[in-house]
Image 1 (tube, rainbow over the protein chains, first blue to last red):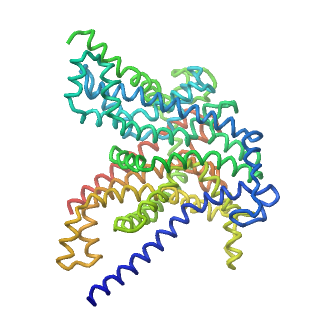
Image 2 (tube, one colour):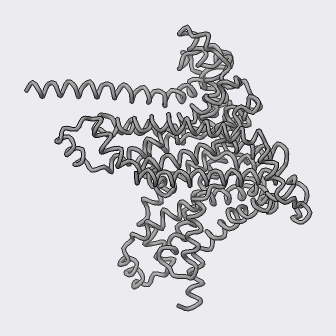
Image 3 (cartoon, rainbow over the protein chains, first blue to last red):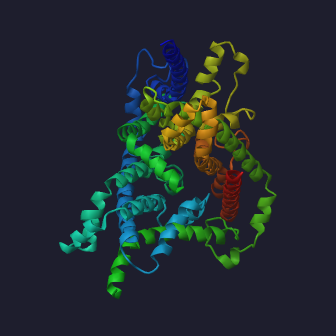
Amino acid sequence: MKEGTKYKVEKFFKDFTIHIFLIIVSITCLFPLLWMVGSSLKTQQTIFSDMSIFPKHPVWTNFYAAWTKGGFGMYFLNSLFYTVTVVFGIVIISSLAAFAFSRLKFPGKNVLFYMFLGAMMIPLPGSFVPLYVLMTRLHLINTRIGYILCMINVGLSFSIYLLKTFFDKMPVELEDAARIDGCSRLGIWWNVALPLAKPAIAVIIIFSSLNVWNEYILATLIFSSKNLMPLQRGLMIFQGTHITEYSLLMAGMTITTVPIILVYLLMQRHIIKGITAGAIVG
Amino acid sequence: MKAKEIFKNYLFVLPAVLVFSIFYIYPFYKVFTLSLCQWDGIARFDFAKNFIGLRNFFELFQDKIWWFAMLQAGYITLIALTFQNALALMLALACDRDIKGGNIYRVIFYLPPVLSEVVVGLVWRWIYDGNYGLLNYWLQQIGLSNLVTDWLSNPKTALTCVAVIHCWKGFGWGFIIFLAGLQTIPRQLYEAAKVDGASSWQLFKSVTMPLMVPVFILVSILTVLGTMQVFVLILSMTGGGPGYHTEVPVTRILASMVGSSRFGYACSQGIMFGAVLLAVSFIQIKLSKYMKQA
């Protein structure tokens, strides 16, 4: 009995110290975000003097000003548009290819597949230089479609790999049944393969969305017109031109970050599954 | 199989191959040809006329700023490899126990990695600000005024500040991988060792560590590859300054391209850097194989 209590007390103290450690790290993770939101609720006058995390008299008009005057409304809609189109493109193109790599026969299949796989392994820093040259030559510079195609390419290899491994595990019987019912190859892809691959597609959608929403460098090199730019680019431009308007900048950053956090909180299970899968591929 | 069937099958991979060829393979090939040329990115490109052989590479070998940038990226990588990964492992070990609220911690720790580098950089830039930043304000409040400095404009502190934020953004990722690795270790092994009277430290040293070696290798390789190529965070925090004190290879490539319109030189930098990265990961893999045998 005595032994048992001693063990319990020991465990309690151990857990207690561990919790303290975990809580401190958690606060460090969350604090900058709170500071960002808090700063966005201060006025241009109080932001340099009021050091409270949340101001006593929050000013919500910063968000309106950032959305309209700061141009973040426009940037937001652009980001949304790019995210939706790119993700849609990635899912369709990569699932078609992955289905073919997994189920169809054609010469050169393995070579093509390893080509996609190799693209994930070989680091190519500064690939934005030739990409910029290419876009200029194709007259795709400063166009929406140019940016969308570039971003589809970025997500393609990983998605094809993930979906192919998924399709490989799909039972052949289902496919055969569909074929007997008169389904074409395209019909099997749409009616059998895609619905079965929903978990993998969810991972691809989430990761590609985060990736496009957070992308900065290609948006910088491709776009020169403000009305085409996505949020990340908009933030840097705003920061460069309104260097001291911190409350508006923080409001713009809050606008940029809130959708990401919402998606993350809703989808965190898939996200954590995805990183593990992604790391194993890499 | 009939030719028509094969053709139909090709149609499935056609869109992917097309996009991939135009936006990956062509630029890949272009990097190599451009690296042998002197070209400002504006004039009509003519390989025969612009060709200068390996001169870009010779120049690059003597480019002090370039190697300085490489060294600084190495410094950030070293900090990420040690502090960031140690923190990630400690947190993963803490959450691997049956601890209350484990899932909440997991969600919080992975929050910084999903944020954009631009947002992370700009928030911390505001906190580090020399005149109105929160960090200096707090330092004054707790009586450490002598530590107050303009963190990101001071050549002595800027690079470390950037490295710390890089680790802040990255440790959650390492944590998730380590945790996934820890959870694949069969519980019976721990039970058996405990029955034999092993202490917590012995458990860690003789059960956890050996089984985690593949995960350690994976995380360290990915940390090196990811950290060496960091640059958006730097653009949003310091822009490479003060002077060249936070420049890294990719910001140098960007500077050659956008700043001085030397597209050929930028490509040769890209190739050199890619080769360095490949060599480093190759050495890491060799080393880890050697260590596994030992």
